[in-house]
Image (cartoon, rainbow, N blue to C red; front, side, top):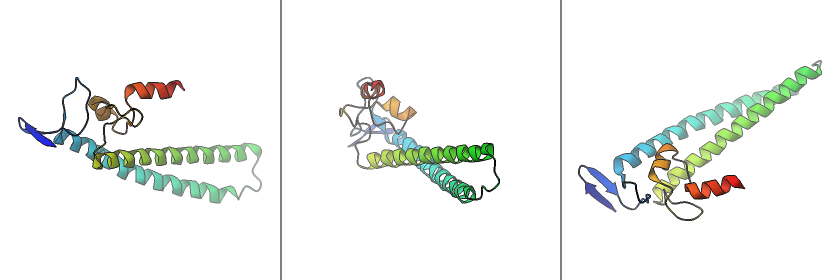
Length: 141
């Protein structure tokens, strides 16, 4: 449901914490735009990282005559590239999930307890899926 508050349209279906103002269409559009921009950037990063990783894997078979230090450096470089690729893929998944939650209108609800995540938290970290209480519990494990 949308309601006008002054000149800003308020989105009442998105949850907020008690002390927070409701989401406006402009605020949600800003968050959505940021996430969409991140999607494009992350897709490009994943594509580039996968190409680099593919090249490193192709070159790894040609180690004839390499000493142990060269082999170790090549292995380290491959592992670093694999880690960066995995991180970019993970962020891409989180971003897609956040955009899907906006579309399904459950954006802002904690996926663990169902309470509001908090508008300010989501504006700072739009991929957040847990409220602060649940996030703190998760980090203690």
